[in-house]
Length: 244
View 1 (cartoon, rainbow, N blue to C red):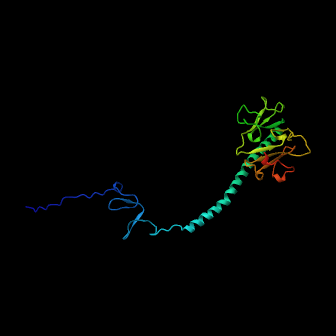
View 2 (view 1 turned 90 degrees about the horizontal axis):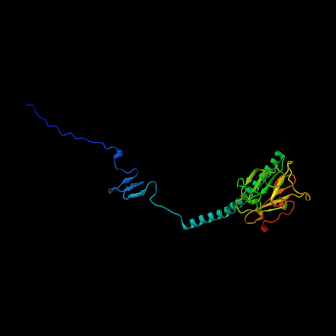
View 3 (view 1 turned 90 degrees about the vertical axis):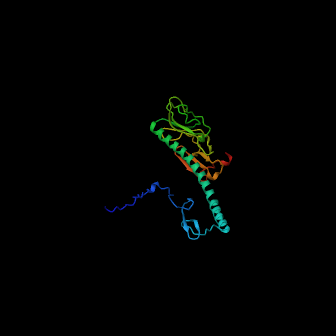
C-alpha cells in the first residue's frame, strides 16, 4: 500500500491594494490612529515636532517690534501725502484733457463740415434724443453739435458730434463770461470770441478742496487753440479756487 502523505492545507496570501487601505495621505498615525500631519518622530520626545523646524522658536523682542512700527510709520507718513497729491492731480488733469479734446474735435469738425460747431454745457448730454444746452457749467457735462441752421442753438436740424457726461470728483469750474456756457468754432477754425485787447479767455478747474496748487487753467484765444497752463504762467490773474 503506497504511503499516503497528507499535504498541508493551502493558504492564500491576498495583497490588498494601497488604494483600499485606510491610510493617511501625509504623516503618521499613533497607536490610537490619530493622524499627525507633517510631524516626525523624535527620539525620547514623542510626536509633534514640526518637520524642518528647530526645537526652539524665537519671536520679536519688544524693542524690535517698536523699531519696526516706527519705520513703517515714517514710510506711511511720506507715502500717503504723495499718493493723495497724485490722485488730485490726476483728477484735474483728466477733466481738463476731456474738455481740451472736445475743443479739438469741435475745431476740426467745423473746418471739415464748413459749418459752425458749438460746444455747450449740458446736464442731460447722455439722454439720447433729448440732449439740450441746459448745464450750469462744464462739470455738468457738454454736447458738441454742428449748427446746421446757423441759429446758435441746438435744434431739430442740428447734428450731435460728441457728448460728455458729468465730471466726477467734486470738481468746480470758474470761467470767463464768454466761455462760461458755450464756445462756437467757425469753419475757419477760429473761436467766435469777442476781441477784447487780445486777451485769452480762461476756464479754471478747481479740486474739491479749493486748493490753488492743484488747479488747472485752460486758456482759449481767438485762434481756437486751447492751452493748459499753470496758474503762474497765465498772463492775467486767474481767479482763486478758494473763492469759487
